[in-house]
Length: 138
Image (cartoon, rainbow, N blue to C red; front, side, top):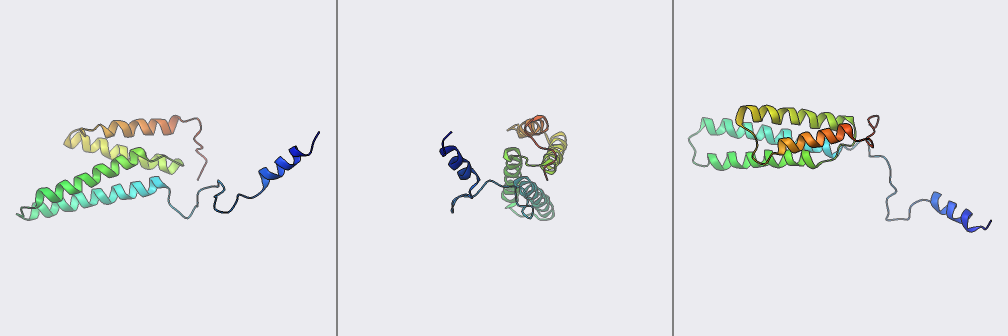
């Protein structure tokens, strides 16, 4: 036929123009967004426990503010886990571990009023049942 087809094929294999990133595999040296979200959640939970211990040990008037701030940080980090996409099997496991702890906390202290525990469960089910998800990806 004509030569434009050959030209089009070479354009498909040419490198991406400068300034545009070619789509590639995630950097193995960088943690996934879920790993970062999980680490932030663990830090927020540790800060809440420390604030609770500090408030219990003192008769300070600012105790409600410190606990409220720590609880808000935990709430925000749990929502971040809900909203972060799982990229690999480790991310799914991290979401499952966070979900397990959220349900344990709900059993002890009552369910979150914003139902984030149900949203986290829905996200986990989506991760597990998503036909596009590659469980072999690292």
